[in-house]
Length: 396
Image (cartoon, rainbow, N blue to C red):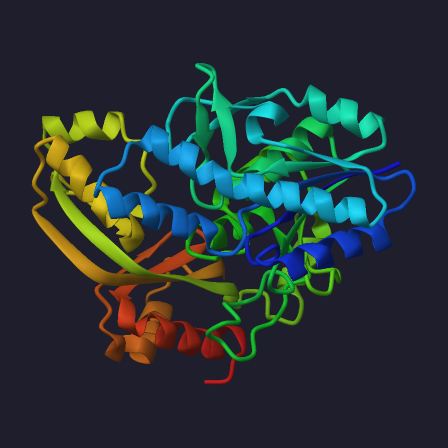
């Protein structure tokens, strides 16, 4: 008997036909003794549309009421998928995040999971039912509905897999797995059959959309193997784990000290808020609950890089706290190379600057596994394509 957690993102359940396809594939592939938990996102762009409706009323809607509104999207999907499974002859039941026992802190819009008490899921699995869970949401200790932030359904799935001691956690999306670059902008990326937690975490934090970084952290902490795969084909995809096999895959066919670039990630349409680190700003930072992409601290200033999607909300936060940015710079982007042996090498840096120097580089930073390049958002795709061809494909 295997316990399997399957998560389906918004594009995978974006229409009735897609929901029926998912239900049919599950029915065809399910083994008699399998216990299956399915975590779903809202259909397609439903969450964005709900956001848009709220912001048609006001530029700064209550975060509590936003959570009440946004959680409706996943409830629609979970119910429709349960109906579809019934038509396939399978017994199923759907639960909201709170019914599933996803306990969070009280930070509306970007809550953190503090505990999972999914006894109702266990009870229904023992009755032979497939359990469908609304991802992205939970309930606080004060019994308030909360959401986990963008990509929160991934986190729900891995958290439940940990609680249930699942044999595997499968993340279904509209691509075949984790690629060496975004297949939407690079014509010939390679599918990675296996990747270790560290590198997947670096990719996730730097713009790769297939897995949310908080989900990777959960998987790493609790040693949950996660497979990213296609909801169209259901074929094997990319296994995220930590084994000797993953290390051997990374080092094959290279010289001993060659730079090994696993993949190139990116994020476009960022706004940089440059703030003075005064007492008022420090107080705000201690109580900060909104999503940010990156921050850089230097010389008494802090640069916050925020996705433009959140600009209205961030502007209001600064206004309410009587803070005025030193500057606000839109239309920025980051491109990040993830690999081994790519830091503290000035000749490598010089060659990199020669290769992409005409793309308006504003800053280059590094860690032990990444090189981050800040540049205008309009040049991000060209930078990704160039770096991928040179350092992953070796064709330039």
